[in-house]
Length: 68
Image (tube, rainbow, N blue to C red; front, side):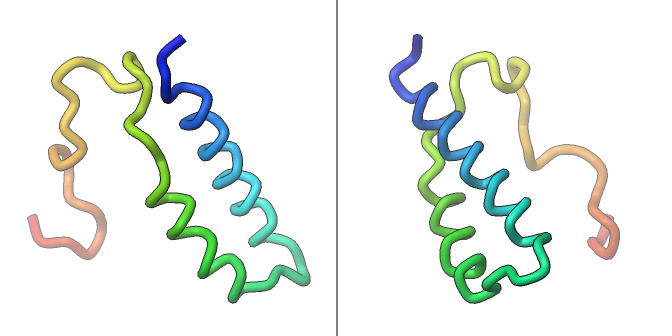
């Protein structure tokens, strides 16, 4: 197993749980705004094989509202 696989999976799981929590009725939005970016910034490099060879996240169609 790669050295960061467990950390990556755990952080992605926590981000998912935070997203689910954000959809609850009494969610603390200040907590979500503080913790969400911190969790995302703490993601280690993805494990090998997560993305196909040569994958570039900056390529592809523009998002709605972006210039082409």
